Image 1: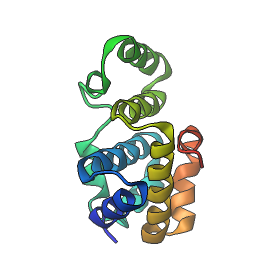
Image 2: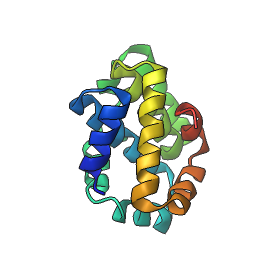
Image 3: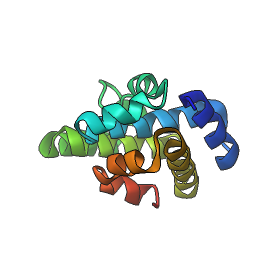
Length: 145
């Protein structure tokens, strides 16, 4: 199973269009890439062809990622908190802001996240997927897991 299969399944189950789904999946993968550490996340991405490239395409820490989430006060807070708390917290804050700015409500984000995790478990295995998610417990909370 590759990243396109995951995007297609998430799109169908969450009732989202392809571009929005790709952005959601890429954003979540980017948060995992920045927040999970070491060989665990590398192994996870190795088992899902295209996941790393999608994470980089929607890199939540890239210049302008926060600005693309709508700007304003939220963007300012993201920059300040990301700077104070470091890259890890900044990646999660930016990722959640990008997801919310994509026009989805929390129920849609949770549905997409839940489906993504189930698909990742199928592709990378439940043990490895859970090891990666356990390194980012606050993401699990945002996805309703």
